[in-house]
Length: 101
Image (cartoon, rainbow, N blue to C red; front, top):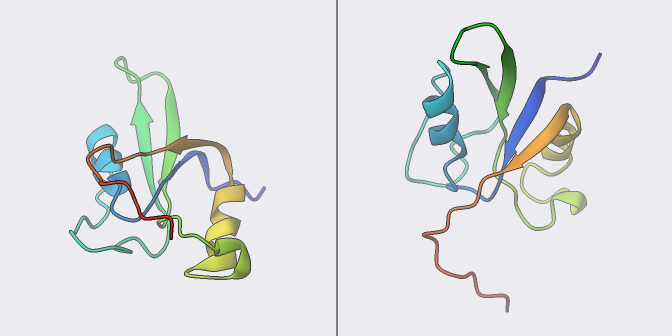
């Protein structure tokens, strides 16, 4: 079985994926104000309010344009994405719009 987690947190660098994982689980991924703090997945276990049901959540490295061409973590990043059952997109709504040029 090649699955690493039930869900993977995916988004741009510094979108708050590690902070979200810290808030919803007992995982302690490194949180810093610079891009690419997460270089490999961190797994957290999330329990329901009664401690009966659990699911695993992976903090994945930041998504960069061109990963399919092996840019950034490239193919390593894409392998992590395909090893989760579902994806949760983390979007930092406080970010300014990125210039598309």
